[in-house]
Image (cartoon, rainbow, N blue to C red; front, side, top):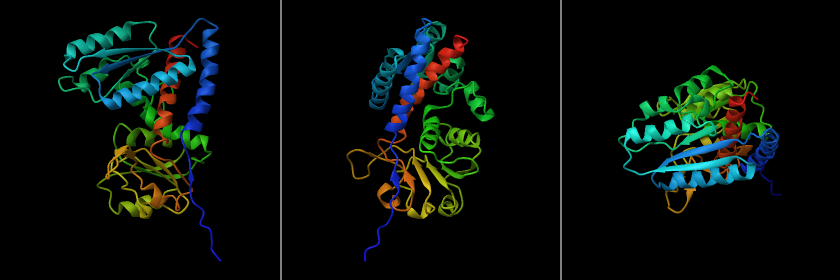
Length: 291
């Protein structure tokens, strides 16, 4: 007799994004009754494919929810002074509630300077150090980065109990690893931040109830990294080694039978980030209007 092996549930981002959008549409409708329309301004340099893809998704999501948008495009050879001037203009525009900048910025523009220029109250993707500090402090008035926030939104949507859960975060960048660790600590999880120098890495991660993979190496996470029945959140976006399309940091096909839940790439964490961005724009708008 054949014994059926229970595979892990593939947990997609779309249901999470759809539920968030429903709630955000209601919030925008309430604001519009008072004549307040949230507005996002995107500041982009050049025509990078990744930037354009994210921009399209953000504009479409904002349109669905009822958030006004505008895009300022600067030439690739823009100077730092010109970039600061464009950013300052958005800072000073009372109609703009949220500003999204695309990073990394081109050579010749110092991010260490620019991050202090963007107004923290409009910085909806955590560029300004003040918002970074608020993430570390657990100050809810700040704006955590959109991708780490999307990780937490997915876990909550699928009723993953974070209270007291052992979490391994694979990656220590300021983009995902560190902020997602702080957000999960804020949900009372016990977090172990792992990285390339962690000794016996697979041994450490295989004890975790939840594994968040954000290391940027295609299909690095194989079954020995996973505890039986663990929840796996794959934040990685890598070109497939064999070409044609993208894959995550997790070897999904190899891991799916061992995990209880796993996010796919694509259609996982990335599909929730624009909803988080929209949520942050509305939050910024409310704070700026004392709502």
